[in-house]
Image (cartoon, rainbow, N blue to C red; front, side, top):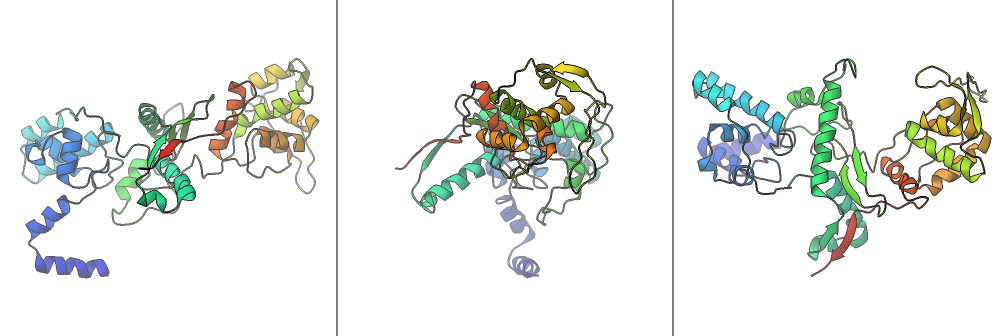
Length: 375
């Protein structure tokens, strides 16, 4: 209701052209570019008055979802929506069919100037939260210079790789099967621009973290698909089941107890009676059994049954204690299924735990900040 009243006041005071001018000078066009002039300079290296039809249509396509249709971050989506805009111009008689087709074929030629605005939003917020806890309001008052571990080229590659993979899964096909849920593109098409995003993401999400094992430096962090739509960082705030990536911790606990990788274990049908619950009969991922094998082979082939047997042999509390040494801080309950990764963990902690293997026993803690300087 307040917005309706403000709209009436604006209409009473300004002409339509003036309202459009003010809007175009303030609209969010991605990459932290506000206004068409800034966006023209940032994306194309020229003034807005020098843009051609294809370039203008590229900017006009962005406001619906600035992160999604950012031509630097998602060039394919940007071109697709740009061509939709050009088609609408043809429908309205502003372009002939020949002109529209010519501009649709125009290549996306972005400025070669390095511009990483809008990249690594989840990482930036992760750093901001740490700095806020350390320095409080001083963070915003004192002109601090914060040097981070991020590798920008690796970050851009991680963001593109994650989006490519999630889009591939949503597209279905023989490898992943039919996707029966809303896709990210469908969600954006239905989303009301003026409304805030839902509390839970209705489309497929993911995360990616690249950690330098020797130092613990976070080189890339992607906490979700669209920071503007969902600021929940799935790398640092989510609790997820690690599945088979937890198994090496079970084997490490066994090795510390004196077991060897040459010991034999039998991969065969197996059941456990759990007090107060139904009998648990776990399976291997391929629903087959491999018979007698060494622990080395069981780990190499990621067999569930041998891992559970080994975990039961060393003891659930021993495995939990080992997980603590690997940096897992979440509550891991002493139940048999923890050996195959049923306990919820923070993804960043799980990723960091593997630095112990890369460093022959020395775990490094994730680091995002190299140093902070004041004036």
